[in-house]
Length: 433
Image 1: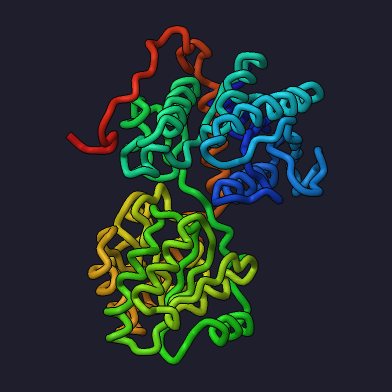
Image 2 (image 1 turned 135 degrees about the vertical axis):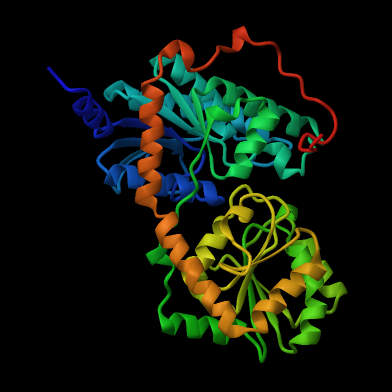
C-alpha cells in the first residue's frame, strides 16, 4: 500500500508532457514573448519534462526539429498571404491559427500530451480547438492586454476584437499565469476573472549571458559615450515604452552633465516621431539611435552609467532585469511590474511615469553619486540571480501544471456556450472606481 507522502512525492516528480503554443519562437523573435517561451521550454526540458512547441515558420528554419531538448513544430503560412500589420492583423491571425492547428494536430498524431500551454491571445483559436479535440486541460499565460497597451482604452474595432479574444481565452483556460502582481490585478479586472484563478510567476533571466567581457564593454563605451555620462535605453520604439519622456528630460540633464549621451537600442513604428522630437530640441549630437544591437546589448548595458526604463505601460519589466544582470544602475518608472522589481534606493531609483522632471531627478541621483549607484547595481544583480533564475521559474510553472491536472475536469473552465455574450464597455477599462 502506498503512503500518502509517497504519492505526493511521485506526483511532484512526474515527468510532464507539455504542448506549448506561441506565435513567436527562435529564430522568429518579435519581442520578449519569444525569448520567454524559448527559455521556459528549454528549462522545462532540462528538468526532464517532454516539451513540444508549435509555432510559426519563417526563413530557412526546418518545419520540425529537436532543438535544445525541445521538439519544435513550425506551421508554414497559408496562401493567400496576409500582411502581419493592422488593419489586416485579425485576418492574419485567423489564417495563422488555421495553419497552427494543423501543425499541432500533426504533432499530436505521434505523441500524447498532458496539457496545453498557450501564450497570449494570438493562439487562442488553436488552443481551444486542441483542448476540446484532445480533452486535456488548457493553461494560458497572459503576457499583456490590449486595453493595458492603450492605457485602458479600446479605441478601434480591432482593439475591441482583440480584447474579446483575450476575454475568451481567460475564461476557457483552466488556469492563468501572469508575470507580476500588477498584471494579476489587470487581467482579473479586465477579463472579469476571480483573482484566485490567476497565479503570478515572474519572467526569468539567464544571468550569465548578460555578463559582457571587459573588452566588449570598453568597445561599447568608446563607440557610444561622449565626454560625459552615458544613458542607455533598450526596447521596441512604441509610445507606451516612454522614450519620449527620456528625450524631454535631456535638456535638464545636459545642463547638469555636459557631454551626456543617450543610446537608444531598438526599433519600432514610433521612431520617426522620436527623431523629429530630437531634432526639434536640437539634441542630434546627444541621442544616438543604434537600432537593434543584438549580441552587443549586454556590453551596451554594462557600459551605461544608468539604464533608463521609462515605460508608461509595463506588465513586467524584463529589460530592467537584463540591465541589472549586466551590472547597470537602474532608473525606472514606478509603473506596472517595474514597481515589483526595483526597490527605490536599494536596487535602483524610481520616478512617476510620464514625468520628465522626475525622471531627470532620478537619473541625476545616480549620476551624482557613483558609489551609491554601484552599490544599488550590485544588489540588483544579486536579486536577479536569486529571484529570477529560469530553473526556479520552470519548477514553479510545472507546479501549476500539476495543480491543473489534479483539478477535476468539471471544475476547470466553463464552456463558451454556458456563458453570456461578451460586452465591451465604453470608457477607460483600467480606471479604478
